[in-house]
Length: 112
Length: 115
Image 1 (spheres, each protein chain N blue to C red):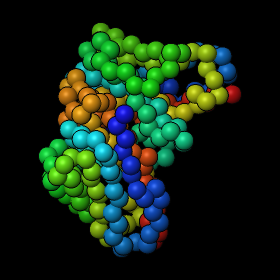
Image 2 (cartoon, helix red, strand yellow):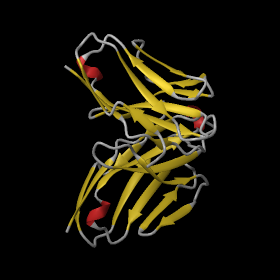
Image 3 (spheres, chains in turn orange, blue):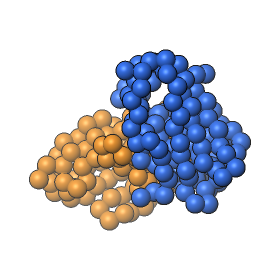
Image 4 (tube, helix red, strand yellow):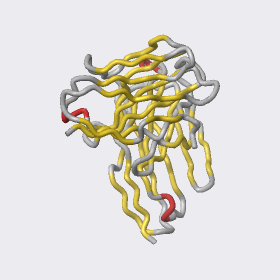
């Protein structure tokens, strides 16, 4: 069974601070996807990383896939209240084929 | 808007009943995935269909079943409902059959409450 450990579970910070969310596994994934979910809505895809060591930037968000494709991180620079939400990492491939294995999520609150 | 639609948005029913959740994938997507999200278990994969055929199965109970129709919409049937089945049910779609690099796009979900 593939598992993804996501940390921290909760993060409460002030506007302007930087933060990093981690996603770790003992399994290898073909790709790693990051989603953001608002209460009562479906997860929205932010980015997909495929290659070991890959770094992708989306404005103030930086995503990295580990060299061994077992871990990933999401770094947010100068967080804003609009970044508040549930962030989920999800691994695909390996022994799980197309299904996504989700981490437990990180609830981020950015205070103005 | 992801392009994936789900109905109904909310469903309230009693224990022992049966309900059907419906999903229409994004235009051109052939794969449909069903996930269950609860507070204690997070997002859990239930089942995947690709072009009408079951492709992968996850932690889906025997009381639950699904199918994908020729027009590619999918239905998730939940029967003999229990209190513990109360959760958000999401449908996602992707263009490819599940090769590991697929990007999945999620619908808005159906919130099921079993009383």
